[in-house]
Length: 150
Image 1: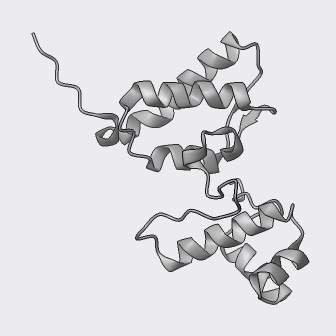
Image 2 (image 1 turned 90 degrees about the horizontal axis):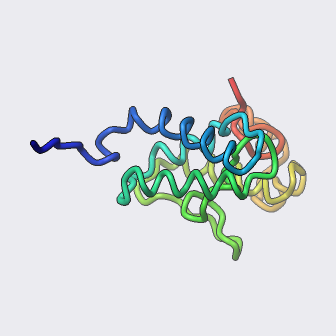
């Protein structure tokens, strides 16, 4: 009897449940108290195509749990493929992303790089501080470059 199970990229609704199960499993295995995953990191995992299917997701979460230094997994804990900023300071943006999404990523990552310093971020981006503050509110980005939690 053959059971046809579609690839994970075709079963996106399974990803959040699998993430939570794997976090619980690997947190217990590694003696860590991890309460969950930040929405930004969860979103990155959800939009990935997972060519390695569940095994790749499982390995990704195991790595993130090991790397996590707090009680919440953040994008910095994920493997490099899920981060917007590379080690050499370049920002990776998905081909075909909307201009507003590109702007949001650039502002968020620049603010994060500048450790929340809005004046330095505005100067780096070549925009006024008031413009930056308006964009932060528009894109719901907090002082550290993370999306606001709702």
